[in-house]
Image 1 (tube, helix red, strand yellow):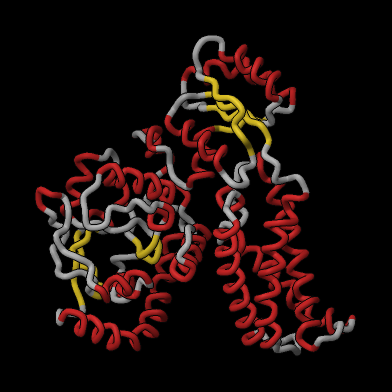
Image 2 (image 1 turned 180 degrees about the vertical axis):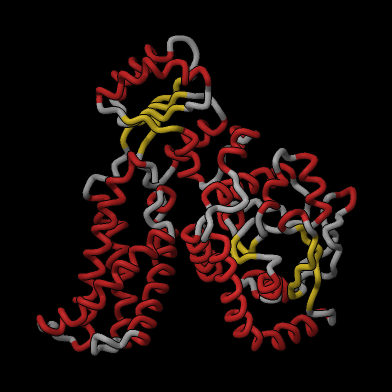
Length: 448
């Protein structure tokens, strides 16, 4: 979250902890319909306090303290909260099962607690938190005229619970400092969002700097853009940006740890999913009599082509060679539509994960034909091949204009902006956040 907005995050954090604790007290009461004794409450508070720390961490990972989540509508917020708290309760169940040191096995309590804590935290974030006045949007002045500036302005002014509203947009022409001074006197802004990548704005900053004495905070528009949209501003992506922000390895431990998690996850989930293979294969065969599996050519790390395995969801396999029309002539089958909705068609890809051709999290792999087109038309598109493609990723979560079974340069540029953001910020925490939001997408079917 942008530093200027962090006081809201601290209040949310403290409120979440309080309602975790209060929900525990109420859950103990509901379990036996009498007020819990002091001894009983303390006996549960001690182990649950350890869990509260982990649970808040899951909230962070799930993005519930990010600008994008604080700006969510109630329906989207409820879905994110439900998935996060469901994960938290599963963690609690495993905690009490594998660490039986506290003399309690709260099976029924955990079921009650899931419902109670969800309702309390949702009530806190949706109704009580706005009463504190921290939800009130403060005025901001924007200095710049780039496409990203326009997007930020529209997003802040349209968001349900934005931390700032843009009162004026000042183009960096003429005496910028004088125009900003007049706007400050008129609108009394708390923030100035400036496009410091614009040479005209940077040249005016020595004069703009003086406004710091009035308690005004400066926000770099590029940083705010990434924070709000979760993607890199493509207008700023050049050789210098790539050299500064992109590296093949995030750090010494990240890549081997991620590979270890991929292997363990592929073995565990892949083994459990085997029970569904006969049922899925039979459903596909009954639908149109075709083969249950397809092997698709995809471009992976280093530009190498590999075979990606899936349950067949279309009427054939054209390997992404869409011809002059740029559109696939195949259709999604009836069973295929269902498999895609619940992502059951991707179970065979766990073999690709185990073989090291895919990761759980990374850019979406594309067909060789589409890659050839996009590398000609989109600058720096090949950068995404420095790391392994993934089953899920930032672009799959946040961009809903994905050109399925068609070539679309404009939409793929947008996807690339999400991939570059992931490449710049990738970490185990970000990977886990994307995983949790993917689970939420599958089961809640809402926006991430």
